[in-house]
Amino acid sequence: MAARGPLLAVLSSTFCCMGLAHGAAAAALYSRLGDAAGVHALIREAVDHAVADEAARKPLADHICALAGGNCHSPRAPRISEAQFVELVEGLRASMRAHDVPLAARNELLEALAPLRSGP
Image 1 (cartoon, rainbow, N blue to C red):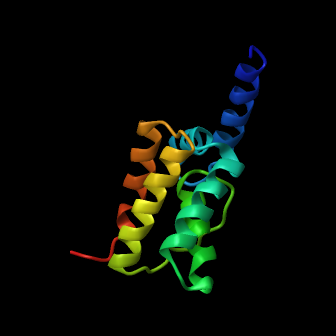
Image 2: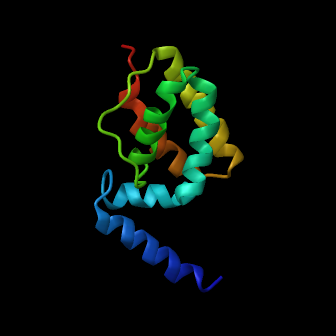
Image 3: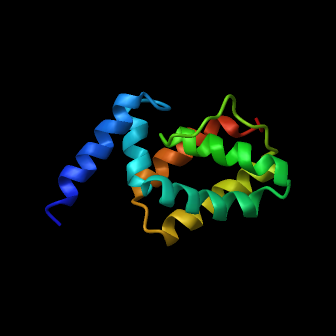
């Protein structure tokens, strides 16, 4: 257990220094979501459920990964319908609860996704 502290510190400082997404706050979110493996599991479960169009899944997954502070390239936010947004949020909420993501990290990711909402 004692070795985890320095490792987490190195990973956290690495993501922070890379300047990904929204800086240190996003890097910390990425870490709290379970780094690459955790983020990809959450995305796979939620995006596959919410977005039926295969071509739209990867850009959306990349965008979520980038918002969380991962090393993913997302040139712009993908367009999704209001219904897809609602399905995505519900899927992510269920997936994050199933993966024991802390409430603060869940809320932070969902807040970052709010600009995807196409409704009023």
